[in-house]
Structure formats: structure tokens, C-alpha cells
Image (cartoon, rainbow over all chains, first blue to last red; front, side, top):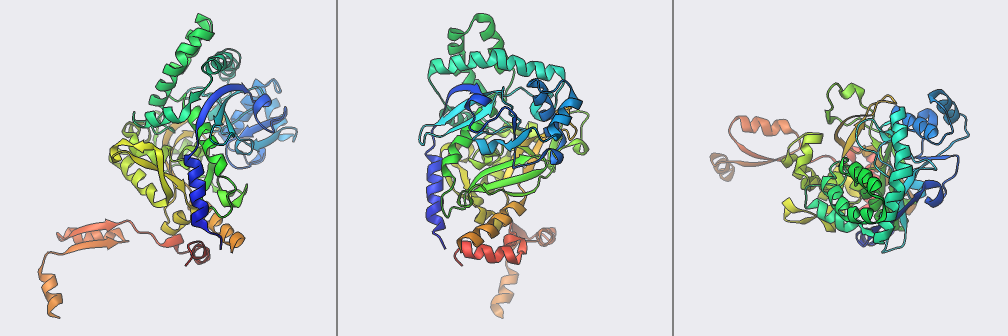
Length: 413
Length: 58
């Protein structure tokens, strides 16, 4: 048997050595590796159109209309089902997307570079809460917002970022954890820090009206930084892939139908199981568990990197969004130390005497202790076109870790 | 035998591993209990346990 402990040490060291920085933006077709004119990227492990859940279908419909490839819902559905559109996971292209995670060729994306290893990761900008494309909404106002983000927000953001040359993501994330964020469902502090960083540069590089409009948009969306924390986590984890003999998880992702993980020592293989509906959640007025879609999004990359649910002990205010008490949050973070290889060297939980967050999920420990990773997440309506209905807490399905352990033992024994 | 009877004449401090109902029964009669959240490895699945033993070097 290969030396797993040694392999895991290398994997964790690589993750902890990451230095993700925001270096600019670009259109998906121009900057994302392997992107094609007829390709749509999605969150989660591979899935075909016929198996896609409601919100992901809604987001695909919206993306096809946004791209001008379909005039209406009916045309979009026919095109999506025709075989002419190639669907591929964001993860296969060094990208990540929240909720439906749809990325189409014309969409602008952030470019995060991991200065420690030179690799890059990509992600779209956050549209805001409620009735948005990533939740499966595709009404004219959703498309209009996406067009504004492409034509007005993207050029302004790109100019401001390039004026600054780079923005240190790890620095912002570390400070945000001290401000009550966990960088998955609570991004208020990080968004504020990002706003303070980008605002002077935007005023310098754009006209007053554009700067005002873009900065107001960022100011009105507490989750702006989610779409930066996610590719930052992705950029941090990718260098830890393909380490022979490592049992460290390098991706956790959901497409709303399946929940999947990838393991460092198992290459690009996905281990999947049905995505669960979060059992504990707070729903917006008028909605209930009957409306909820199963767990969806690449945002569990944050938990994979030691943030999100793993850092929920640093975010007491999040209980107003996902339910429970601050003590529950601390208990959740404490339990995750049982299943990780180590602790973070930069991301800390102040209420645990600044202890590093539990980092580097070990599939062996998950299965041995029968204790799956814990994720806090947004919840989309199960029907396309409606949007977000709540937020809650969910355990990753233990089956995927059992499958990974069996496959790992077969490969290495 | 005497040591056991002595034990049960003292205040008992119990650590309960597993079923919560055992803890609750003791608390109902005023016994202090700490609950350990233990779950069977691999959920008791033998195929998974065999694979896990190899990975843990057991």
C-alpha cells in the first residue's frame, strides 16, 4: 500500500501554500480552457439535459436566450435537447459556479491566479439574491441584468482590477473570517473589504455614472464575494490534485440531481450519489420544504478548502439565514476537525482562540467515523423560473465517500 | 465483590457511548451522564470496512 500519510501531507501542504489573487476578467470563450461556442458549463458532476433538475434547466434556458441562440423558452428547450449544445462541468475547465453554475461563452468571468503554483481558476460575477439565473430564473429582467453585467459592469471591473494589478483574495478571506463571515452563505465582511479595495480604482478608471452604478450594485449584494471565494478555493485546491496515494478530497460539487466528490489520488474520477434536500432550513415567506430542489452548486468548494460550513463557528450571525444557534455553529466546526487531515494556517475561527479551520477532508476519516462533511447552502425552487426559496444545512451523502474508499483500496492494494 | 457494592454506593459518573435513550434513562433517575456521539465505522458495511482497514493500515 502506498504511503497515504505522506501523500496527504503533500496534498494539504499544497492547499495551505496557495496564494489566490484576482488578476483581471475576461469573457468565458476567451479565457476558460476548453470553452467552445456551443458549450455550456454547469455546476456539479457530469449531467445530461434529460437528467438536469428544474433550476439548472431554467438557467440553461436563460443562458441560451442571453446568448441569442434561442428566442424563447420553447426554442431553448428544443436546442438544449437537440445534442447541439455540449454540457460540461465547470470543474473540468478550472471553473466553479454557484447554484446552477451555468457559464455560457459570452459571460464575463473573474480570473483568479494561484501565485504559488501558477494555475488559474474562473467564475462568473454574482447577480444578487432571489430571482436570478443561478437559481433557475430566466425572465426578461434576469436576461437584462446579465446584459448590463456584460456590457457595463464587466469592463468597469476589469479596468479597476488591472489598474490595481492584483487583489489578494487570501488576505480578504482571512480578515472576513474575523468579521463574522464563513465565505459561503455569509460574505458581508468580505464583500465590504472588496468594495473598499475596488472603489477607488473604479472611480479612477471609469466615468462617474458607470462607477456609481457598478459600486451601487456591489453595495446592494452581500454575496458579491461568494463568486470570488469560490474560484479562490478552486485555485487553491487544484494543485493538490493527482497526488499518488492521497485520500484528500479536492472537489465537492452538486448539480441538483447528483452530489459528487473527486479525490486527489483518484484522478478525475467522480464518486456520486443522489443530491439530498437540506433537512434543516429556513424558507422565505410562502415557501416550504415541498418547494425545495435537492442540493445544488459548486459552492461546496468552500467547505472543501476549509471555509463555509467548516468555518461556520466564525459566523454566529448566519443562524438568522440558515437556522440553529451560534453554539450549534461552533459545535459543527468542532466536529469537522474529526474528518480533516489538518488545520488551516491562515483561515482562523476567533471564537476557538483563533484556531485554524478544519482543512483537507480525508475520505478515510469520513467513513471510519461515519461523519460526513457539513455544508450550509442556499436552496432553489425545484421548478425552473422561480428562484431562491431559502437557505439551510445539509450533510454530504456518506455513500460517495464509501464508494471512494472502496475504489481507492482497489486501485492501491 | 465488595468493591462493586462500594462503587454503587457512591455517586456514579457515567459516559454513555451510542444510544441516546440509555443516557435519558439515567438522567431520569438523577445520574450524571456524558454522551459520546459514536457511530459504527462505515455504518457497519463489511465491504467498506474491509477497504477501510487496508487504507488505515490495519
